[in-house]
Image (cartoon, rainbow, N blue to C red; front, side):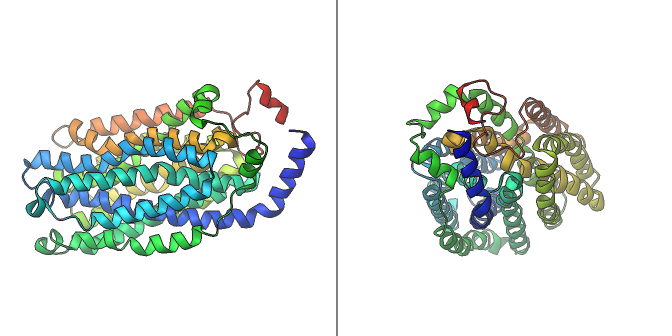
Length: 452
């Protein structure tokens, strides 16, 4: 591609991309809100409800492990979803994938609320639960990566993280809404809670699905993707091209994406540990999640703007190192049973440190790959890494010790994940402000240097 052609494309993108990026951000915000609304209501139900609905015949400890495992099983299907939907997104288009994922996610969430308990359908009930979770995981494998890709390719080079940040802001809003919905549900009498009360939050997701579907119908394919398509630069098999030319970036992304485990350690394992092991009030602990995520929602756009101005790596590394410390502080606070301290440490861990990591990741991760394989690279890398997040609560419950300091092995696991991600970020090229055509080739010495 000549310098003139690239300059012309850059001008077109700068003139008209902010409005398109804004529309893509709204559509992605709604999709992420739905995904994490489901994520949180399922995590809360797995921690507080499902042992009494789907695993009533299991021993007490085994029932909790099985319940948390159904939360994690969705992450098994995510890499498959990333592989299939990433291929379609790179070969056919981003928009079609985003339409498919929102429908599949919404239908499965609604159906979970319809599954009878073990007392009615026996072993078939938890089997159907697992099937719905696998389908949700398949959908999630392409949802957020597709959203980030379509925003990134619409946005001006110097504002990519700001626009992409609304994908992750949708996750915190979804988390807040889901937790607010679950607070009164969790306070219901056990007879109502375990029969139909827990189902209401799952059924309520239908509203978001309809709104998100209407908004996404107006989306356009990004100019950067259309240019690759029109010039015949699409890979016949994107995943093969990914493994051949960008395998090192894929490995770095997988190890960075494992930081998502800190989110599930906080929101799922932390809730189960605080209520089941320490005996803290479940409603108060749900409010810890609400307050920390409201804080994150407010801070995320500013952290994204900071990333656009000073670079991805400084903000990202500050977040990973912050998580390394605050994961210990948060569980130590739970051990004291002193609620003000728990709230303060929860704000620092989830509201600030974790927010910095995930918000920068919305741009930092897909920027590791060129347009032709961006969907496949970012989807596959994040979803393999996120598998750790899915099973982190189960692993945490299995490795935790006894007594006041039983949480230490879980915190050590989280700290190691964060330190590895820090190392990966340090060896990744800074991508803030780079033109869309340069992404994936920064610092390389192959033929693509001709793009510069």
